Image (cartoon, rainbow, N blue to C red; front, top):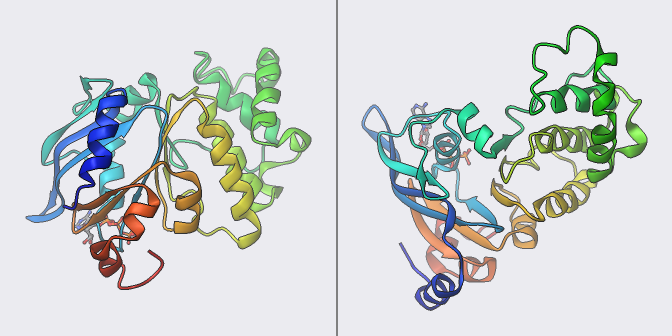
Length: 263
Ligand SMILES: Nc1ncnc2c1ncn2[C@@H]1O[C@H](COP(=O)(O)OP(=O)(O)OP(=O)(O)O)[C@@H](O)[C@H]1O
């Protein structure tokens, strides 16, 4: 692993402890090390990207951090507490929420009703939603405020299924924000998105990152360069390089790993 010693030493002296940390994290599939002794530190308030060539282990790391997979070895800590044995629901209660996975968007419901359904989860109304959406009127104010946060204010009466793709992604992010996360994990938030939506969703992520910590896997390196304070480059399950976009993109081994492509 290539370290940016001066940068990291300065950072460590001035920065708070990491909000999320992986220590010696490993995942083997039938003896194959998809993730191999990962030591990752995500600083509170940062927007941190995990990048790397295909098969580098990004998705596996994400699945380990969000408790979809159990590690073969190693530990995960959130705010200094070991969360290795906790479930996805446990860590969501701590405020660590993965978007585009647990955020369900119901295509036949309006934007407003999708937001009200999402909002009832942290408000302890789960199980009541089927009684009557009218019973959820008290959530309206918060639903409108969430819609404004993601620029969906004028779409409240639209059916989610009729929204353009970028707006659907905005609604998914809004349903995630309904859980009031302190840390958002975004798994390829721009995947499959047309050029016309990328700028809007990039701005949206930038906006919702304020006051939160974001860890994202993303292949679009232009967007990573724009949004992220720190980038961890994975290759063959290990950290190849870490630093700012300028630092990692000028790194020879990173360029080699991408075979002279976008990095
Ligand atoms: N369930 C599994 N069983 C066996 N091997 C797996 C499994 N999941 C992942 N792998 C292997 O682990 C390695 C890392 O895969 P992973 O999907 O984490 O990489 P990635 O960096 O997310 O790749 P991509 O950018 O292509 O999505 C790959 O070689 C993959 O084939």
